[in-house]
Length: 112
Image (cartoon, rainbow, N blue to C red):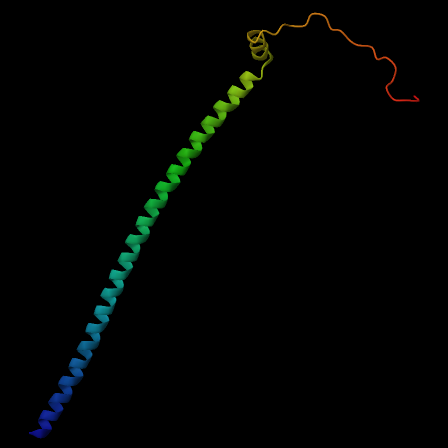
C-alpha cells in the first residue's frame, strides 16, 4: 500500500505542478495585456491632446497672417504721397511754389 500511495502522490504532484505553471503563464499574459491596453489608452490620449494643440497653433498662425496683411495694407496706404499731402494740409502746411537757393559765399576754412 505504501508503494501505491507514493506513486499516486508523485503523479498528483507532477500533474498539479504543470497546472500551476500554466496558470502562472496565463496570469502573466493577462497582466501584460492589461498593461499594454493601459499604455495604448495613455498614448491615444496624448495624441488627441497634441492634435488639439497643433490645431490651436495653426488657427493662431492663420489669424496672425491675416493681421500682418492688414497692417501691411495700412502701411502702404499711409505711405502714399496723396495721403501724406492731405495730412500736411490738415496740419496747416502749404505747398512751396517758389524754390529758393542760397549761393555760397567764401569758404569757411582758412587758406583755401
